[in-house]
Length: 104
Image 1 (cartoon, one colour):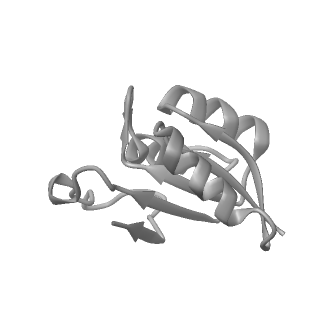
Image 2: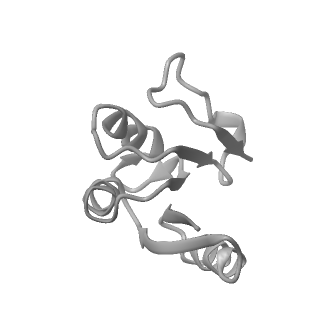
Image 3: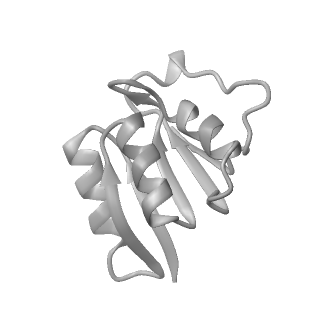
């Protein structure tokens, strides 16, 4: 089973993703609502997959990716999501580790 951490500050998006993943081959370990909480939960829970919102109250899901790229406890897969303003989203030239999926 793939262990997932949801990182999204919007309650409805987080709840919808949680509901969609339950009963599938994914185990939702928890949910972080900002960059600081995501960094703590990644270190504590060591998920296999991150579902990241790009726009968070204290930064970006891409900030989380940069920090994870320098960490030893790195998830195998990362997805970034930008629902609110897809026209303003730009992928960085070299995000490490790479985003394996982008949801718009």
